[in-house]
Length: 436
Image (cartoon, rainbow, N blue to C red; front, side, top):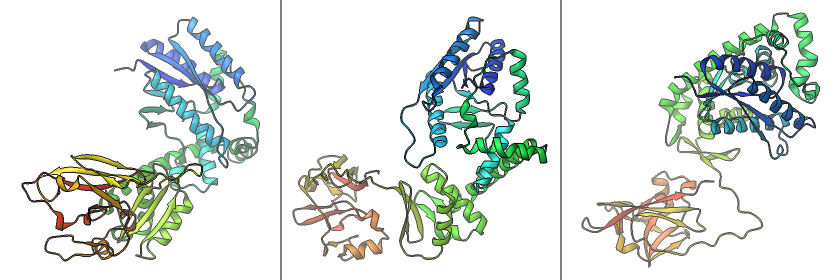
């Protein structure tokens, strides 16, 4: 079934103007509506004039009977300190395009990138020392955030687009920032590309073909990583023994895939290199910072967790709750402890609800004794943690007491000495740390 409408990212420049014009011609025959999406970055003095041009052009085409709607967004904010303007503008532009497309019910956004853009992207990625994922440059199709991003002209020589614009006399704007040498792509296009084409006339075609080969290699690497991680990773983390048994290239490939799955973005080259050096070097517990995430090695496994945000300097730490009454199954947030207690109704193996009506919450002081099973003797918390393989970061949270009787310990569970009789109403307790 044909979509009700399709969106085109429309800057007003030559390429996007030609794409919008061609899309209108094709969509008219299919009775598909078109929505032109313009992003006002707020970075250039001419941005208001570009927005006005795009609005006028769309009104003219709509008056000729085209099913065309124009929409735009103005970006707020500025790049963070140390962030490139290009990276900020690209990220915010795609977010705005996705928002507008979704608002209009368009499941796909057409982008006007062409073969020269693809060749330049490959070169820039190579100059940055990118791996296969970077050298794959831009895909023709991609699915992100419920939107299909399509580049129908990725294999088209830009001279053909220029000829299309002249033939149809399409009014376009000229972005003066394309001549600004502060931007890497402009330096490449203005100073390097002419010499490259002079020496190698088929460079554009050849580099775009290389990007396609890199895309195939990337797909193969992703498939291989999935096979390796099916054996070496699960919900508890990465099994370092099985991971280290892989050949070096597959070990690196699997680690990159696992890190991206955990953090939602590719890890930096330096970060992966450090982990490849340090993870096999020792079996001792260890931690590595990865942006807002922390990797933690314990007993042959590597897991990943969000780092809790530090409290604001302007605000005092939240006072810790000292008491708690658990009267039924449910979740109980505990102020100041960085998490919540969950009580789950069970038929056996829990603690009686009657014993949880007046609980005292306390920090570990040392000397506490915990009995893990009825047939086991009580032992210190330190020894119990070691025996059960509980890492330090899973030992956080309060100890729960009924009077002087220890009821529950995060990471270990309910003390065997307070396990309820089968006939009693009872719950199982678990500690859930708050996300960062």
